Image 1 (cartoon, helix red, strand yellow):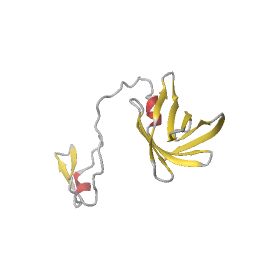
Image 2: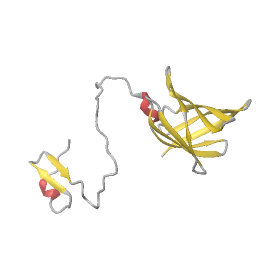
Image 3: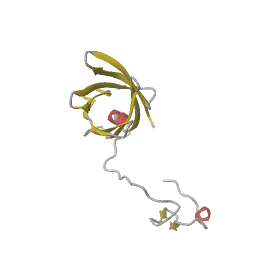
Image 4: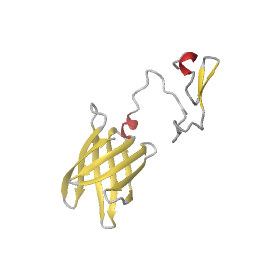
Length: 149
């Protein structure tokens, strides 16, 4: 943790130095509202393999052959995802990362009871905020692309 000298904190509302080791930020600071939080449950060893399932976590702007929507992935394992169509309709999503190929996501989205589309999405391994893929509608394949953000 980087320590900021106490003299840099003087006069800034919401900050309080505790023995020059920690900086406390008040929860009631109007100019710095807390909108959410996270906590650490485990730490991997420095030489551990990359956590490739985390490639998928995030909000993705998706376009499949001109149909646009947002894919919100909050967890890859266990798989937790939702899709919001351009008209605001929220849809359930089934599937998850391919166990043997974690950069591949296989999902299905029920756009209607008789139109459950299958998607194969491929995370770009060098461009971490981009995916490409295919969807099937009837007997035809259509292109899919997405950007995180």
